[in-house]
Amino acid sequence: MKIRLAEKEDAPAIMALLLQIANLHVGLRPDLFVPDVPKYDEKELLGMLGNEERPIYVAEKDGVVVAHLFCQSKILGTTKRKIFYLDDLCVDEKCRHQGIGTALFAFFKEEAKRRGCYAISLNCWTGNEEAASFYKKMGMGVRSETLELILK
Image (cartoon, rainbow, N blue to C red; front, side):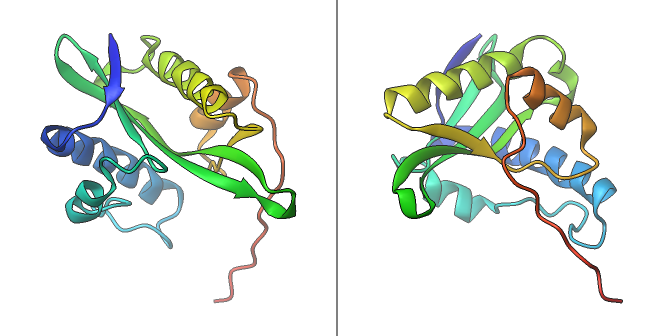
């Protein structure tokens, strides 16, 4: 498996992965997500490619993109400490449980260290137990919670 920066030619594969995540989230929160509407459209994706502060990586297996990793450099609160935010990680549903996600996360952590970051962070939707379990297994813990009250 090879992990590398995403290129324009990877856009169709990345869009397919974004759709997988979008439809997973519809099952978790149909009030907030719409079927077959990804987090980013193709124009937004193409605009992000090549942005050093918001890099996108892909994992290839036998020359085929099987996963993506969207990252973002951020500043944490008033401390001005730099963090590396994991905006999106998806392994193709046909390729899960093969160590690809673990390898991508390890790559993400090393990239954060290389960039001199204080910490890494991400958001995980309540109800996405598989993702939450994975990230806890990777050593992550809860820093804060977002609470809501839906007004109907």
